[in-house]
Image (cartoon, rainbow over all chains, first blue to last red; front, side):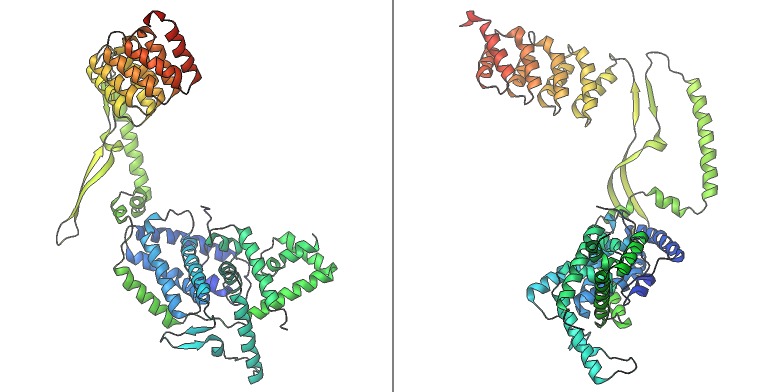
Length: 227
Length: 311
């Protein structure tokens, strides 16, 4: 197993979300990362001794990012919650086997990405429609209907066009393989570095790069007629 | 840098994943090549389109409910290898000690004092030649071999752990010393390190006349997993094939059944002295036709041919 130290503070990940690009890592964030790793190491040791409070502290550091990834990948709050719970329970049960060969962040991301990939594979078999999601009360609604265009100059026509575009994009994303979908999500929407993505998927940066290239080509082909 | 390379790396360029020099070269290339510039514009447009997809965000309610469910589930979840928490972790212990400078001073003083004390002890107890010396350092070298039981006192946080510990010891003495022989016999049978077994069998070979030692050598020849140990045992037993029928049988057994050709060859040589023996002759006949090693077949035939009067 490749042992690479990757620690991305949650605040950094949140900043990168939605912009599709990541700003250069500053000296401040690097100090923050190493500090976060030291704190993590202490918490992990405590958690390995059966201290549940320490484990819950660890969870709180990473759970927003984990839940967000699961939510984007599954499209439903219930599935995202299930994956979140399964991932952290798996981590808790196997704390004893954590050997500090990678950061806790990479480790938990490995677990989550595997669970999400399993979920996507099962869903591909069932051929479910992606944009239809259920809210916490179990009611179904179309994800794209929830988008309100609050920009100035928004009009019903533009809103309709945006919804159409959203539907096409969602369909194009459905055509990607689970792995391509995962890499694209982690890069474009989560703003993670390819190296981090490679670590989380237990593969090399080069393979992650190739998968991203394939995903981009497929999306381009699927959305080529849209201007 | 050519257009092909640019097309493959446009995505990395737009995601800011290219190294500075590659980025600079790519930008230079874009200034010169209209096709590649158009390619970059197209991928950039795709990224903008993809950003138009509405993204579900984690609401505080969702996060709180996920955390609550997880907390409930953790109540009933056990860690695998939970007993590890009882194991002694020196790093953790040291981390608990927040007075490192004081600890360093204590270690220094104890080390210094210990060094002087050891010097006095060794100076006043220099062993004379042939004298038995037993060295023990119970404090630093003892290791926990296994935990027998863990009991918690009811109504308190006290835990009683019963465990076995092993302490390394050293024994030095003459080969004729019964204690040395006893240890060698033990090493020849049970030590997990084959190097130690070879050394002990080698030493025991010198005392092969002793029935107990002979027994141990026969055992090693028959059952040791390491061919080197079996060969060493065979070396010690070779001289005894004439006088001891049990040794002869063990060597014969090795000749017929040992999976190592080297051991079989050694057994063949050892049995040359008793080749007239019926059981040996039978074994030789079998080997001369069936043994997978050409050398052993030839040697068996040669030995059989050298005693024509038997037929």
